[in-house]
Amino acid sequence: MTDVTTDDSPVFDPFAAGFAEDPYPHYAELRERAPVHRHPLGFWVISRYEDVFALMRSGLSVEDRNAAEGPLQQLYEDAGVADTRRVDGRSMLDLDPPDHTRLRKLVSRAFSPRTIAALEPEVTALVDDALATIAEAGRVDLVEALAFPLPFTVISRMLGMPPTDHERLRELTGTLVRAVEPVNDPALLRAIAAADNEVAGMIEEVLRWKRRNPADDLLSALISAEEDGDVLGDDELVAQVALLYVAGHETTVNLIAGGTLALLRNQDQLDRLRADPGLADNAVDELLRYDSPVQSSRRVTLAPCSIGGQEIEPGMFVLANLASANRDPDFWGPDAERLRLDRRGARQHVSFGGGPHHCLGAALARLEGRVAIGRLVRRFPNLALDGDVVWNGRLNLRGPERLPVRT
Ligand code: HEM
Image 1: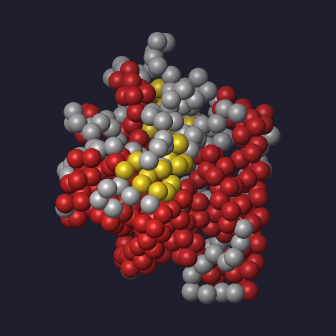
Image 2: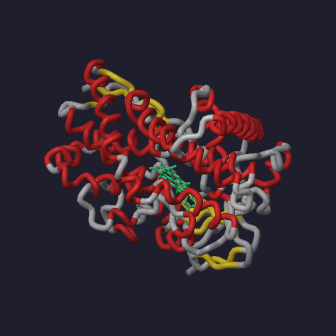
């Protein structure tokens, strides 16, 4: 295969004008002309389904992505933030076996399909409460009215979060999640590192409270594992709690808001979903494919390896463009760019990554997405956009920040 980066190849430029609103034409060009692309900042970007799928399952490292070599890492060092992080780099998402295996095992029971299925009545009640408020208001920002509060409340209840300054935590986690995207601005790098430390401090406070007030919840279960000593240390506990709290809401908000937006822009598909509630499960996977709530994941090469016919040296950061893979016509066929709720095999999307780090919250996200979007569109047959969508400006956890609708 020779179609790798050449001098006249397009550059992966997530900072380009218009990218945040619609990165898909850019991805199409990358797939076509530079599917295995070396960015001037020194990291690699892969954009085809076949390569992304293989990379996710490759068992390549996720550790030390900030220690990988190249100008991007130099930026971290220059900004003086490389060693100050307490959450980013220390959760299971950023660890290889055996630490990854041990940490994932500790929390995976709480996310088993059976445990998650049992949450459906509670999720339905939360959605119906939100819909009642929306009905009364008539015109709302759907992010504030439903897409954010639902996953936020569900993960807070699962963890058993005590009273804390949720507004401040929300603000901080909004900055912290930028750690999972390419950042070329030293001021933002420093802001991320500061948010990381403040979040860690707030979670320590939360854990102190929970130690005095144990209950039947995930925080208490993790605290007992920590008291067991050999399974979970102090710093590990803080990083896992922060990951669950952040991953639990900063992603699903994009599924609910972005998914609803995709339906409102594809009225024929919206009508089909209203007419056939049996389509709901497949519809959620097609919405996840169509507009990936997490646009990319990453691995680090520890040894020389070959991706899509390109030799890549050790110590390289490789960004897997999940959102592009989800629209690759070589895998999905000529209608890859179209939303088709009855698409066969929609579940093969890579929005939840794959391999050992496959999203632990996938069943929960699917449940919340199906119940929220399904009940919303059936309750309001005249649901329509009511103004301009404002995007959150994030390159990875991309989604609407404001979605004005009327019922
Ligand atoms: C990991 C996507 C919701 C918890 C991941 C990964 C992706 C992802 C792409 C990395 C996979 C990889 O690198 O191979 C999503 C999307 C969601 C969502 C698109 C919503 C639509 C959730 C929820 C939770 C959650 C609700 C619940 C707390 C996690 C955890 C990991 C993870 C703990 C780390 C797993 C590991 O490293 O072993 N997710 N996620 N996610 N997700 Fe999600």
